[in-house]
Length: 456
Length: 59
Image (cartoon, rainbow over all chains, first blue to last red; front, side, top):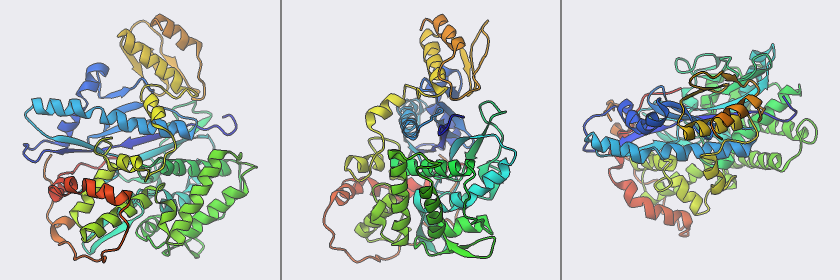
């Protein structure tokens, strides 16, 4: 892998909600079927790759899922991720029409969040390409204390309802994690999935598949979530000595951190010490900072990540959430929920506040509260709308995604049938399958020939 | 969407608590204006709306 280059990807499962008070009972699977009918019409499947090289499909539990194409920059990743919100949203009008034709009047909502009202969870998975190594398990395990404590800066924030009342938490996903490392996903949700599918030359690469993160709405939160994790991986790949903060009990720790907005709850380390998530995150930030200009090239983007990381930790330590209230999801939501609760004069378990949370995660540019906050300048940006709009149709240009994007676009325009996955391209008929094992490669003579054949 | 809401869920059992926060003399800023704007639509059948969002788990 070239120095300082990494492939990133984000996979988001969206919550699907039909608001049809008068309608007959209809299952989420049926709603998803109507929502994806237009996709099936052009793609002959509800599992397709799009002209922007991303993947769109219906996943387990009838969740529409969007997986970004391979990106080698955080800004491309954020643009592609945000483009995904628009792409799934653009299915709604057609889905509602088809539902109406079937006699069901209702409004479809898609939420970029992690739990439904019954407490079922679905995920946002991060992918980081790393060099294959013999000690992958130990390598991945070393990242766990970071992943467990980063929720105090990159968590989505949520109201947690319990039989004893409601409270605000850092992460909706924390309560749904059951082990540290595993190759399973739905059966026993691990924080890092060790399934060995690099979608690249398997002799060289592995994919670090992180499934413990929350879906994030604010672009700066996504920048920090993926950016800080990338910086940690860079240190680990360079064999920089990290502080040993191995946790005694990872499942207890992730829950203890999630439910303590004061930042004072401690977690037990394997060596018997007790530290707060604030302490642990600060330790990691200090090591990263000490390596900027060395292992980590000093760039404006790295400076922005470190500044936000630092303010996020301070916001919790000093209990001054205003330090990040326009940038980090949990602080944006905390402010929103607190202000609305004060306005209504109600308790935190009031359903109107749950309604507010859903509105925040609604991907509709018209209805979604996130978008209204952006309009009012209450949430800051990393990329602009023009770039997101471009990313809905154009693949990232600096990775293999460029080739897939060109191929899918040309094949659709010419009306020819084709088969695509992350590493293969094939036109149906007497054509060879093209295998693209290098995710960094943006040019390929075989693909050029195929594009010429398609009249491109 | 099926109403698979089971009894014993928090919404059903927890009566809203009385107001805990005294009315703060906060300036009407952009966030207040926004909350005023969306207040009506959020209040319509909020409980029924929230409860009807039930899906299976994903990954």
